[in-house]
Image (cartoon, rainbow over all chains, first blue to last red):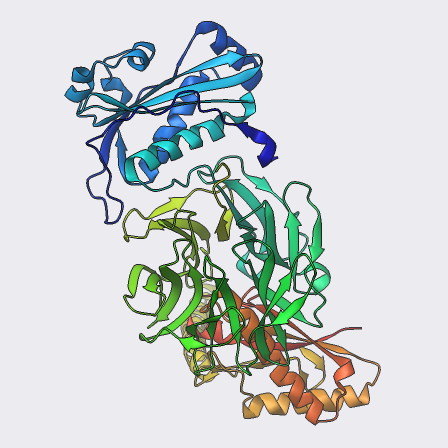
Length: 446
Length: 163
């Protein structure tokens, strides 16, 4: 589906401009950049055609509001109220009157237009530097109308990239576990949604317990744990076709699966006789390789982005701590030495950091440390939270949080949250049911 | 004695009873919570079911531990005796953890706990062919509370008939 979705044509080469505005994403942004997102203009004929096909009154405004929402939730931008806009969208797209936009304190302006051409959706948009009175970028795409949400996300990614200098993360999806029912008898289903919570779909029916889905960074495959027939095993699921298969032929429980960065291997734990060790299976030749061999619990493995190293947690020291090793299992080295227990290490896609869950004095923390264990930073503290997953650009972490129940054991909930690497911009991601175990996909369009 | 007086007296007696029983219940609850844990291992019987008379179905563990307590060993010896008397019965040992740990580690911990129970049954002569092990990690608590007593009930290995 993804491959055939979007044909992206660059019809306008970005004009060479040395823009003054730049957003620094390396520190907490307490002063988000004021940006005006002018609604994409649309002629009456196109508007009616889209209304017929998509049941949306004004698709231009709909796409713009996706862009606006993405920019706002990133915490780096402050989309200004449309009420204050003086220039009409169609004219602004031709030639913005920069004084007007300056007046409302916009530093960047996004304009554009939508056309219905040969049953296709054609969108062009421009990013303007208001202070320098210059065009920073102009792009256009043509796609099937049903992709209108993705168009909004792609525009957001382009704007984010142009203004921050780093790739965006808006044209992505989240796979997670949707939860319902009492805490003692939870019903869990695999679910997938766009990064902003729309297009939610359930992938399993809830007949068996499912846990810890993870995206293949290179394709639309997912690996997860299912209790199908009461045998906890790692499965592989093709989201497009819905086909599933058991990974490997292990005489016992396999769990904690993740893909290698090239998507060709699954790394996971296999539990037997009270000890859990780490194994890999090559998805092409089905070859299984044992990576750790220790009487302790070794689990939650995650590859470095170059595939050369693995981080995992082990209780070989007596308590759960974070380790790294070479991808063949040699050179095991403990890296977490702070107070408390450390688990669920996940290597950042940028390679420089490992995100983790820490349990200390009855509180759970999500934090990051460098790959040698130095520079530990705790981003957020709560009654219960765990399982961080990185946005593909390594700037945002998504995780889940569970609430404490009251004296009667009531009031349990599980929700998805995200937080910036800087520790700012903590947000709940709205889901139609309770949710846990989120995993962030790669960018769908590259 | 008039009827009204009788009624009044009865009421008084009733009220007194109510007050007394309320006190007794309160006291019982208080001592129960204390009496239901040793260290942080559950020693109560609230959630325990029986495979046969005198054969409890579960054993409990300390936080992050899979060591069998004296009471657990006693329970498992009773299970072994019962299994020897019923050679046609196979069992699944279901290992569980409390909610105060990461999901994946807890899956491994549940497996380790169930295996501790399995090893003990095997030392009392039960063949490994008759025992399978299944970990639920923290996925199936018996008590949904977020307090030390609830967690202690949830850290368990339960012996379930498989056939």
